[in-house]
Length: 237
Image 1 (cartoon, rainbow, N blue to C red):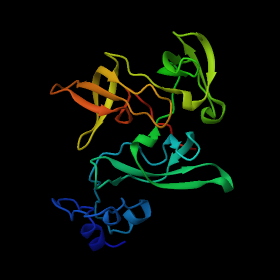
Image 2 (cartoon, rainbow, N blue to C red):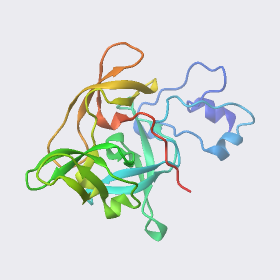
Image 3 (cartoon, rainbow, N blue to C red):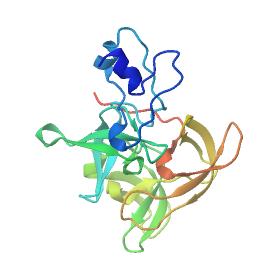
């Protein structure tokens, strides 16, 4: 990976102001890895966007085949999605010989693992409704064993163990969050409203209106562009 290729493929040297625009998905360059960066003889390569997920971050990936969330790791930097302003990622799921790589994963199929005290909603199969709750405590192997959640409303209140597919983040009004905006990265804001599907099937498809802390117009984004404020990334060992 030489200097000329780095520049021609869109990874700018220090001081460069333009790059070749990709016309189709196959033409979109991935960001060079650490070995490739060192091979560019001291030149500084610059990413064209702010990462949503950093390399090595622990995430949960929604498997359409299995119909559930599974644990995974972000296996490289994002690449520019030509039909969207949002990047896509390579994700490794499974362990040992069962490891599998998923390429070109869009953001709606990824989410951060839930943490203790995170506001959530729990799906009740009997009523086919979501009810408010919060994560009760730290949970290892949550995608396999489920999350321990304190449910605050509905027919089954109290501490319950639920599958990862039956729990999703909840962003109540005035909740302080960070929203990912293309070209800006993670920006702090307050939740104004939340609208979402009541169905349990598929990944989260809610929309939120956010008021950025720095002022400006309200923004409407998908829930996969929102995370709780002060999120500390979780990296693999």
